[in-house]
Every structure is written in C-alpha cells, then in structure tokens.
Amino acid sequence: MQSPRYYEGFDDVLKAIAREKQLKGWRRSKKIALIETRNPRWQDLAEPWGAQMAFAGESIKDR
Image 1 (cartoon, helix red, strand yellow):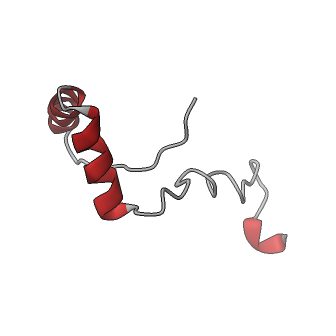
Image 2 (cartoon, rainbow, N blue to C red; image 1 turned 45 degrees about the horizontal axis):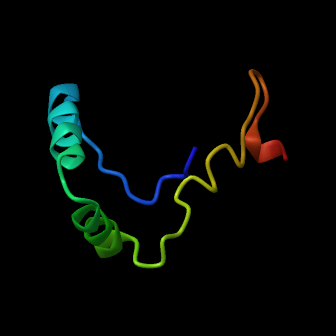
C-alpha cells in the first residue's frame, strides 16, 4: 500500500464520498498537480502515524 501524499478532511461522509468519486474521474496528471499544490516534496504524510502510541492505562507523558 502506498503512503498518503495528500488528504482532505470532511465533516460529512456524503461530501467525502462525492469528492472521492470526483477525484477518481480525474486524469493522473491532474491528481499529481493537486498533490503538488499541497505537498510539493511528496513527503510521506503517514510517517508519524502511531509514533507515540499508548496502551490502555498508559500515559505518553511518562515515556
């Protein structure tokens, strides 16, 4: 699975689904241009995910 290079946030799932369908219809070159407007270096936006996970009853501050 490829790591995300671009994301959008939505407060309504129907809006998110509509946007996903819109993007799926775009040419690859248009998708790349969209990514490069927000993430020109193509940094892995998922890299820090889970970096500081805490288990139930455990505090991240104690680490």
